[in-house]
Length: 108
Length: 114
Image (spheres, rainbow over the protein chains, first blue to last red):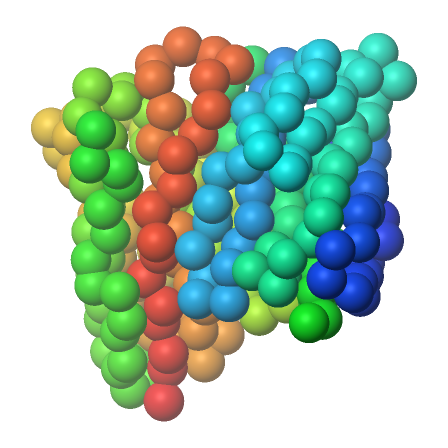
């Protein structure tokens, strides 16, 4: 099955800093989503991005499907950005395979 | 669009008891997925339905686990004879009935086995 890797595993930032999270996957996919899991365990859908680039406020994401990676950019980080960021991929409507996540802590 | 709804939010039970969780997907979403998430890990796939048909089951889904979606709308996940290792967050997601569409997740049911 598809393998998903995320880096870095842990990240500590000062409020206002920028960061880039990476997701590598081992096979072709046609579905890729980035999620933020908040301290209460809720999975918040950030981007549906099987290819291309999208932006939403301070967040943006880029997926290069041919090279099997995706990047999530967080600019001007805030303490509310803390939590775990997951990349999840799927092939043709099948179940998601989640990466291990990047745990982000933003310090005031 | 009221989102994916899961009930209960929390369940505490003694080892050996049976538990049942419910998931109400976004209306008109044909696909429904169950995932399990243990502490410090990403969610892992358990099973999924296309309407009322259960199309795929993970090897994680032992014979103590059963899932149904009788009318193609809500779904239930039952765990019989619960064990300590069943303690986890159980997440439900739904998506439209065609491929390459985003999955929308509920808030999950957190199960604690005493």
